[in-house]
Length: 570
Image (cartoon, rainbow, N blue to C red):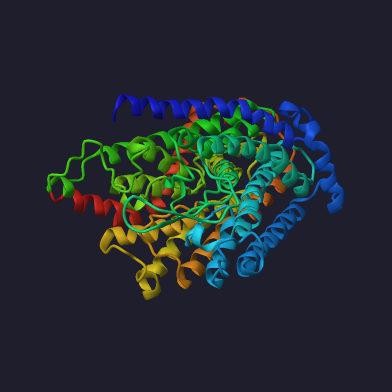
């Protein structure tokens, strides 16, 4: 690794930590019902719009029970799935389709509708040749906002449940969805989109244009309103590209500054919500502890990825290929190895999935680190809101394990952890693991699954395992070597995305409801503090051990076996 590369990586981590500390408390004010205190007078500007939305929708701000909250979230997302599916199937009859694109195939439309509603944004299609401008904006772009707002809303309900005592309400889902969109996601994405347009990201309704290159025949250059969708895809940890090449496309990611800003945007809100949590539970040390646990896992995985991509490939070395720049296969040379490895780590740590390089071309251990970050449950930052409520489920388990070790009833933030909370936490932690492993096993034994693999042996297994790890943890990135736009993978991955999103939201809200009804006990000398380095290490250990026990055997068959085979050629 070069000195400039090291400075880039350290600067990224420091910048994320600083920006998260500044943004987190502001988001807490908004979620706590203080949008009037939003920065830059946003409360004055957007307050009338918020109240207008409530009047039109007939929404009252009364507190909901967790069951009412869950029903509202599920119904809202079901409407989103139906709308995106309908737009894809009918886009050839709708306006803003200058390329005259036809309807999307049913299985692909099903997969995409589930994908964008669940904040996964897995794409088995090429956006510029499949989706009209209207489908991109009204369908996919809108879901980028609403799926991210769903994650924030569920997180807010859980935070209130942990803070409140002897209450049945966890907030109002319609209010949380509206405020998350209006006061958090919309202003940030508007600002980032304007900056990206200034850097050269396209934002136009012009049809694709024909250009005459210096050599060969004419080439068609796709255009479209990309900058607005790219901003929210990163800030909302969505990740779906307007163009097929995603962040490696020069129209999506034209400059080094645009690359750096998009990479920062991926982790900005997931990191900031740690401080939001600390503010909402009236103990900012809790937020610092959660952020420290995330960084304690993220930084070593980032280091493994960077060092792996700087290592020489023995197969190329034997051919006399110069590898002074590291493993540049599949990399966008405008950004280089360090920026590509950083993006790969950030996008798999968060539930983002956008890419500026092809993960299929990473060295085996680089792919190992990226895959494992997803398999940990997308809790090392994770999706906006969803990563943090997943980490809080791990915190409940860590408190329970610590209580068993010292023979004391476990408590978190003064609330006793009882069998019901443990059962719900176990569902949240183990269901994605089951989805990934069962889905991978089925795909490896049926011809419809193996026929899409482009490489035999361990790497082909890694392609399948990566796809289900991505779908089963609502990430959306791909190894890029698996032909996934088939009926089998569209349906199988769609089911995986659905289970990994909504079968986790309901248990999380159940925990929120159970906690809100409990009275908080005063801390005593025997109370386990959950903001100390000791608890951070305990939390990290629980996350890592669960990930290791669950996925090390499958990883040994994929990237580890490939690494051994590759370096055995020396």
